Length: 143
Image 1 (cartoon, one colour):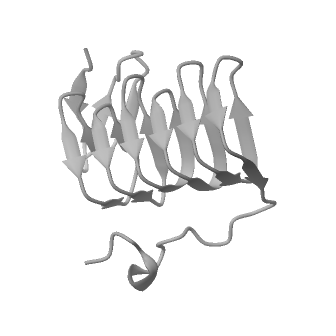
Image 2 (cartoon, helix red, strand yellow; image 1 turned 180 degrees about the horizontal axis):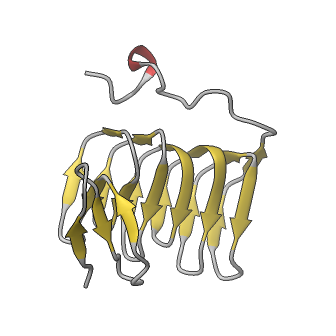
C-alpha cells in the first residue's frame, strides 16, 4: 500500500510501495489507469497504469507493479515497473530489480540491476540537449 502526505507548494511526499519517501508533484495511484499523454513539471510518481506518452522535466519514478505503455521523456528515470516504449533521459536511467523494459534507452548514464528484463537496445549519449517534447509543438502530448 502506498502512503501520501501533502507538503508545501502542492508537493506530495509519496512513500511508494517500497516505502522510500520522495516528494512528488504528480502521483498516479496503483488503482488508477490513464489513457492519454501526461505532461508535467516536477517529479512524477506512477504506481498505476498509463497508456500514452509521459513527459516531465524532472524525475519520473515508475513503481513496482506500475506499467507505462508509451514513450517516456524525463530528466531522470527510476523504474521498478514495466515500460513498453522508448526512454529518453537528460541525466540518467535506473532500471531496478523488478523492472521490465521493451524499448530503446537513450541517456548519458544507465544502471541496470541483474534481474531486469531488457528487450531492445541502448543508445548511449554524452548529453541530451533537449528532451523530446520540450516545446509544445513537438510534443506528442501537445493539445
